[in-house]
Each structure stands twice: as C-alpha cells, then as structure tokens.
Length: 80
Image (tube, rainbow, N blue to C red):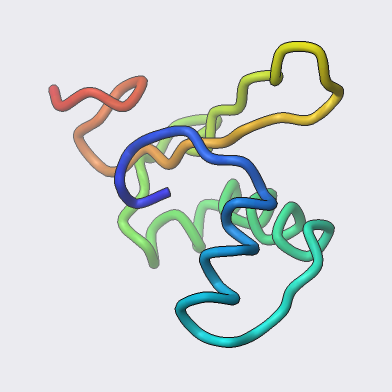
C-alpha cells in the first residue's frame, strides 16, 4: 500500500508471507485497515488527517474492496 496504489487484502497477505514469513487472515488485515481510520493511529504512521485516509473501491464483479493509503499532503493519492 505504500507504493500509493490500490491493493487487495489477499495481496497484502501474500506480501506479508513473502517478506516476513508470517500468515495473517484477510479478516485480520481488514481489521487493521479499519484501525488506520483512528486519529491516533493516522498520526503515528503519518497518514492524511481526513475522514477516510484509507479510501476503498469495489472490485468489479465482486463484493470485495481494494484499498489505498493517503499520506500527509495527498488528496486522492496525488501530491498537493
């Protein structure tokens, strides 16, 4: 998500497994994505102070979403 592109929870799961050798469920990953909406957590990680610093969009033909992180100084993933 730090590459400023949208990604799916199962892609994040695969990345964590490849990089750290740990397995997390997509439910746990989704819960942590929701936690990033907390103001204290946003501040800790330098995320934009918006109502939604983790915008999501629905995948076509699916009930799943993909997510994107917005860092300070960004709106909709673009530098201001």
